[in-house]
Amino acid sequence: MDQERIGALIKDIRKKNNLSQSAFAKKYGVTYQAVSKWERGKALPDSALMLPLCEILGISVVNATVPE
Image (cartoon, rainbow, N blue to C red):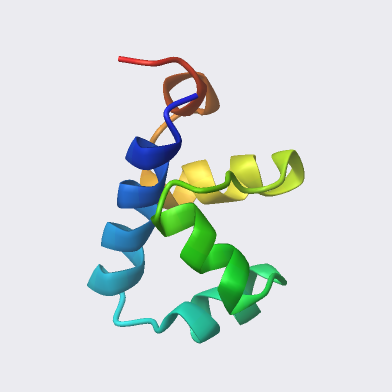
């Protein structure tokens, strides 16, 4: 998985929706620190969150997990 690519997609969608990291985190039941780590490519969302996040990112789970 390309953590940095996924993080950039999450950050882009969050900003396009005018959400703070805290608001985005609350929407998905995680901490703002987790969102920060995702966006910086330091961690990936939990596997239980991958499907909902991929849906809002407009990508398939396969595309999110396979390097380009």
